[in-house]
Length: 315
Figure 1 (cartoon, rainbow, N blue to C red):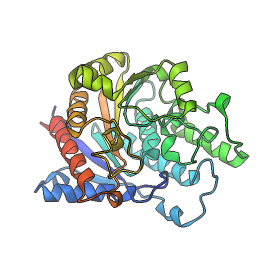
Figure 2: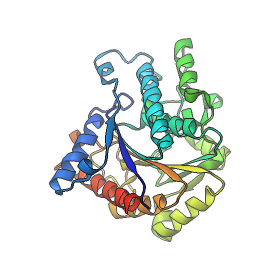
Figure 3: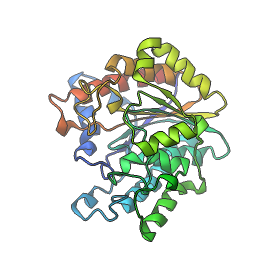
């Protein structure tokens, strides 16, 4: 496809409930060295300053832990993603925890403010909680809610203080565009672990979901084709790949593994097939946590997928 690819490294883990996701990018680099690959030498890379020092301080709001730091990350990431896209480069975001994906979506929207943006969320989880509905307060469960400008107060279970609500509203409005995406322009693949509050939103908005069973029954090619057909009206498409979309037998090296996921082969084929579409403008990988893994297996599998994606974009 002969695209000029750029890595954006986001070594942030303040949105996760377990520690270690910030080490995921370096674990992928180690996997590349073990493969004798020159990938990280060939592809230019920029690292976004992180807020991981907040891990040594109090969490702040128990319903939006370290939200001030997450807002700072959104601002930084969105500027870098927007600048990369405006330079006609293809950003591949290598992220720690998934909370910062809202910053990536903001950056795409800043670069293309008047264009319709679609999102393909390859993930075991829906990530559609808000401070009003979260059972944990971990912000890696909230990035889609910020992009959708979704509070879901009808299913409110938490009493959120004024400061947290104000910071939440700032998160939703990063780039002065809100919402960034609409429910009709969202597709989930391998989704299988949701809370009732998220199920309510999926049903209410009739969100497109392809389960692992759908992938097995119909094959990667048909799932990719149907996903892209569903987003046909979009001008730009973002693909977010959380490694916990893969089965827990593979994805031990991630903070929230879930049974009945897709295989590494299915994940790789799916990502490669999706980015062949000319509307796909950004690809993200997140949630590799080598501290939970043995022999760096998750990073090894992820590197192989990343290598296939880069090869597809640059050849």
